[in-house]
Length: 129
Figure 1 (spheres, rainbow, N blue to C red):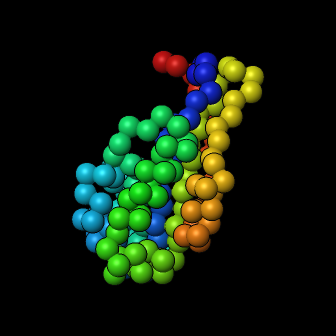
Figure 2: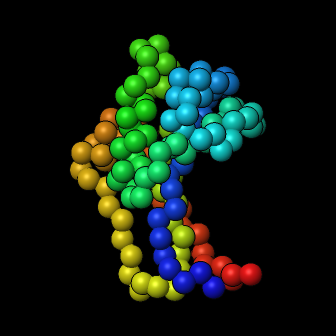
């Protein structure tokens, strides 16, 4: 059984009517592509930051830095995407009995300014093999 609850990572999910290759090219090695493809509701791009970030705050700030570095035409396209979701992943474990991660008001304000969702996904403990 997984023993410790811990922060895993943050995924950024982007949704659009068109392929999202321009974002992949613009961000280059600053991100890892987890998925890019067409779905019934349009195109989906799921990313993780390329930098090794140990906290929720640091990971979100790194994504915000990448977004702020977009050239004007891509920044406009980003603002007009069908969806922008920051998905915080937490692995649940048996210990500690209480765990918390935090986001600063400045980070939450920056995410809200992007009209993005903030989602928390908690993965159940699992049996170690």
